[in-house]
Length: 48
Image (spheres, rainbow, N blue to C red):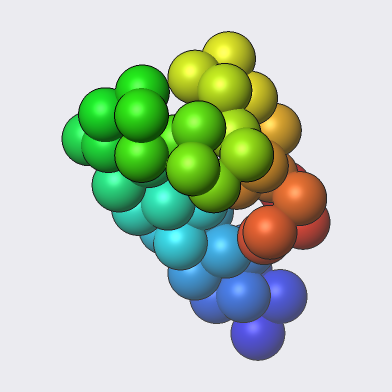
């Protein structure tokens, strides 16, 4: 069960990183996120 949860969290983390990377710098700024913070934001969201 823990392995499944870990894999699902990793998958959600990767999806979040990919989606944020597709956004323009302006869209990220509107969200209060810089391009350099994308991985940290995704990590906080999914506990990675």
